[in-house]
Amino acid sequence: RKSTLCAPRRLRTDARAPPPKLVAHGSRRANIAPEPQHKTMADDDDVPRPLLLCTALVCASVMANFTLVIPTSTYYSETLLDSGIIIAAYAGGAIASLTVWSRFGAKSVRSAYLLQACLMTVGNFLFGMFSYGTTGLAENGSGLFAALAACRFLVGLEAGVMYNSNLALMDRCSPSSRVSYLAAYQGFVGFGLTAGPAVSATCVAVAIRIGDENLRDALGAFFMTVWGLVVG
Image (cartoon, rainbow, N blue to C red; front, side, top):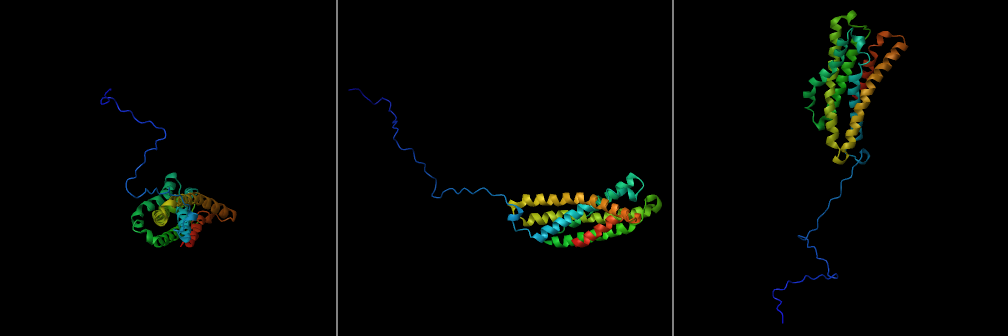
């Protein structure tokens, strides 16, 4: 009889053998969370519609005020440098006002919007009154040019409200609909950038059509004054 002590053990290769069982660690099953679904503004009621409408008007008005004088900036000066100063004065006011607007929180957006409407209305009205009937820096002197630049600086103080409008939307919308509101916000900005030159050119055409060249330089500012009253 041969000894089998040193013989290697053969592994069982039965095709009918049951597969090995997987033992779960613990008694709880793993809960796989479903992937979050992207919502649109129509599916999200977190942002009130009046707030969204006011935000649209405010954002559009700020951008329109910035680009309003681009087509007519040469009417208020005799050199391109002075024309650039008229345009840049708005940006200077915007930079200077950032500290003030940062004090308004997301819950005080109404106060921020009212302040923006006041700055827009008063600044554009004064700019329209000073520019009424002007034909250039040479005839009106440096004093009037400084007054026009100061009025544009005053209007520019409103621009910091863009921070508050964005903050108000992001504070109230859900994370799943945040992309939709950011896209809408950019749409408000784009509309305002194109509305400013359109309003200015239209007002110039209307003033020339009615035969009042003195109103040519001021009608756009008066239009934005009415816009500010509507926003307020």
